[in-house]
Image (cartoon, rainbow, N blue to C red):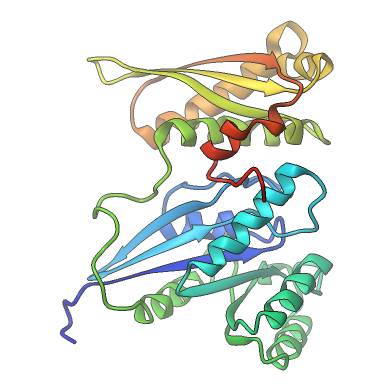
Length: 301
């Protein structure tokens, strides 16, 4: 195989909620393709981040966090995560070690992988938040399970260890044609990305359960000759009381959410953005099959 032979492959990223999967994929790609918040279960759909290194194209698949599902949306999200792993040449299991141990959700994922006899690459994340002795103990215990082909220690937030991980993955990609254009960094349509950015701001601004009871839909996208774009979005919630919280006193809360989303969209799109947000109550939006299909989820999972 010559040096310039093209390679391409899929790398599935799985892990428990809030393990740092979305932070890692954004760091790998070098741009924001997946939303991030301190809250668990932020990612609802599979997101592809595309990295080109020389003649090699790596398609990273960020998946929803894997946990014990209770609701229909939970089941669809977890099903999408396992499907993302099944479709990939290499699977990275991201496990956060900030608390000095592996949490129960991650232990359950490892147990399921063992039942499937599937070996994966273990990536221990947030290593800057744990003592070295505890980190080495966790690494040694997990390696002894025989489930992991390699173990990497990184901080997705700071980037420590990420470059080595990326180099090693690139070397393992199979020979084959590229799946995406050279200048493409994600498969997510801009309308959906814009909605996800606004949803992220809701997660960051509001506390407790409200973000999980809301979703965002880009209703219109109008581009102008001067290069600017006008985006109109609807935030759907389940109850009138939730609508009042998102609006805030005198519309203050929704203005804060909208301003934060607009500024980030301008940075991503590199153009002027006019963003209009509206809040509507739709009690059963979580059971709408069309919304699942828009996210790439199976409503019957």
